[in-house]
Amino acid sequence: MNKIIAWIFVMLLLLVSSSAVVYAELTPPLPDAPTYDVSVDKAHKMLVEKPEHFILLDVRTEGEYNAEKIDIEGVELMNIPVSDLESRIDELDNSKVIIAYCKSGIRSNTAKGTLAQHDFIAYNLLGGINAWEAEYDTSTSTGVETTLPTISPVHTPVATVTPAISSKQTPTVSPIASPITTPAQGAGKEVPGFEVITVLAAISLIVWRRRVLR
Image (cartoon, rainbow, N blue to C red; front, side, top):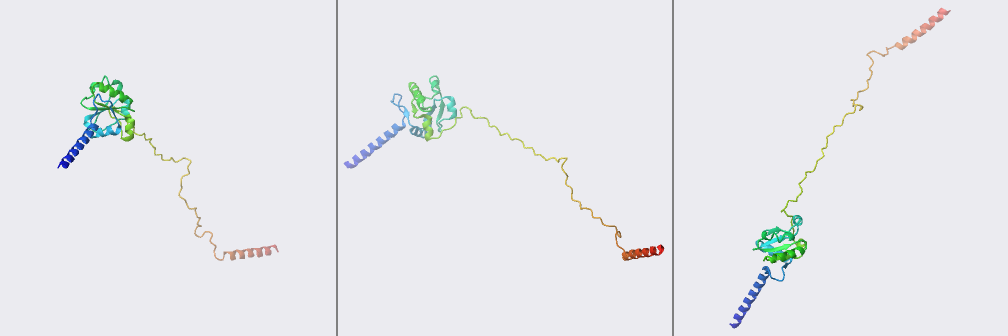
């Protein structure tokens, strides 16, 4: 009986200990905690699990933010350059935990200190957006319109040219058969016996001339 009670006690102790560890991992540090730094993987886990509890604060310039940003569905996004943070601190909701980031983590570390002075619970994303994009996707900001207008490609009209017929071009003439001269009916026909008559006439002329010359 005593062994059973001891076993139950050990199990309860282990359960409470594990719960405390999980709670500590997901709970942001207090303003006076020694560190506010958070890795990319840990920040991603926190943002995905409880997006409504966080603000992703980009402390880079507006131009940098417009070019690329970290965007997690359900997480409030804000862009306040670190140089303007002190004067614009009232724009932030102090009921949410802030994860500040910049390009490499230097400016966001300064922002973290400024936020802590105003009693915000804030994290500095180690490595900044450079470290984030090595592991996770980033997206182009839609806060300020930077998209160039779409220019429809200019189509050079291609004229349909009908080739002109040159005045020197020899027109195609349908072949005309060379005329074949057909002798008139009866023309050039040899009369039967004509040669014989001619010969006899010639002989008679010769005989007549001889008689006359005698």
